[in-house]
Image 1 (cartoon, helix red, strand yellow):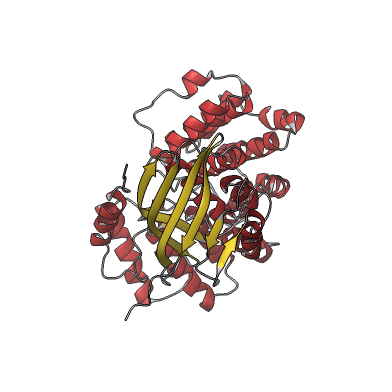
Image 2: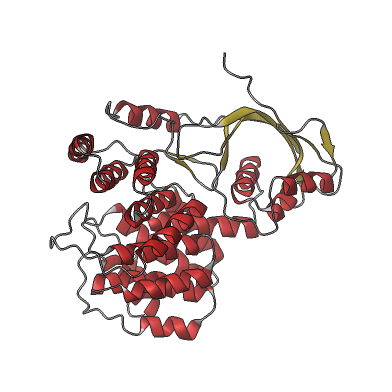
Amino acid sequence: MQTRTPLLILVLAAVALMTQPASAQVPQKPYEAISLFGQPLVSAPPSAAALAQYDQAKRDFDASATEEACLWLGRRAGYLGRFREAIAVYTDGLAKFPGSYRLYRHRGHRYISIRQFGRAIADFEKAAALVKGRPLEVEPDGAPNKAGIPLSNTQFNIYYHLGLAYFLTRDFPKAEAAYRECLRWSKNDDSVVATTDWLYMTLRRTGQTAKAADALAPMRRDLTVIEDGAYLERLLMFKGEIPEAQFGRERPDETAPEKAIRAYGLGLAALWRGDTERARALFTQLVRTTSWASFATIAAEVELADLTRGAPDCASVGSALTAWSLAWNTYDLDLVRTLFASGQAPTYFSSEKPGRIVGFEAIMAHHRGFGFVPGGKAADARLWLQDLMIQRKDAIALVTGAWSFDRDVAFAAPAQRGPVTFVLQLTPDGWRIVHAQFANDPPAR
């Protein structure tokens, strides 16, 4: 049996590239981000209105490259789905305005969008240090709400996004501290609801049920929310005042991020009552949508990564190799240990070191040398597999294809790439790797 990965990603990438104006600042890659599971993520073509706003921001920046002009050029690039370009704009701005907590705040946001959580945390921690002691600063909206009233402020946004970055890296004590500080800067019902939502989920993850109930207590149907109705309904669903079926009902007028908020909430509700399979199905369905940059989808991806690392699906060759990609993108030594056959002497050829590595423990030591740790850690580099061809005979599968490793996802450096071969064996516990061989493409001439 032979299968090949679909060409849809390449087609979408080509469409996205054709919509780029000549003013784009960053050499293009055929993706904006790589998911934790090694899936290239491509932004949808932008609207004409969004392009016009970007072009105006570019003209303003070219006329006078102030901190404000830099902020808006980066924001408009981000609204187009050009997150790497936005990061590059903010990085150039920080070289000129190194004390700009606003540039750090916005760059950190876009690092979250492309799943570089470690860099996001560093930016938000720097922004928090720089903004300390300053008076509240209202942050203008890029897309004004229906009331035309900006609801957030810079301090709120720094701590809100810092809390999210900690939440996504599973540093729940720091996430709680960030959200409690964020509540101090939450000056209206929308802000209180949005912060309380993530605080509640953080407290539930750490088993602080009494504190979680206290956080829910002020949440009522009659709160005045303009933007965060889906968050409020999710909290009321967690509180038991809205049935899950009602909360999950389709609303044709909702945006994709609002639908993602509902789907993620339903997945958490299933997870917390012990229905792991339904939670996995809901998270999987969500991460396959086009709303890959929404916070709820990113959080669902992390939840699905947790579930996969705890119980990897090795029922098929493809699912086992997806788990292997996740192991690299989370530097999880425990997952690597699960995926390699341990009852015999597996072999491994690295693209980085000469010679054959023989034996299970030698392969584990090799991964430790690359920084893999038990339980994994936040990592900003990304690995993925492409053009896989699977040939199976009885209990043995031969897989050939290409691997890519991007240490610099946000900017212009090309990804490392080369051919890869896997041999997997079907065991009573599913498919396990018995041989892996990596090589590098020859340098371009």
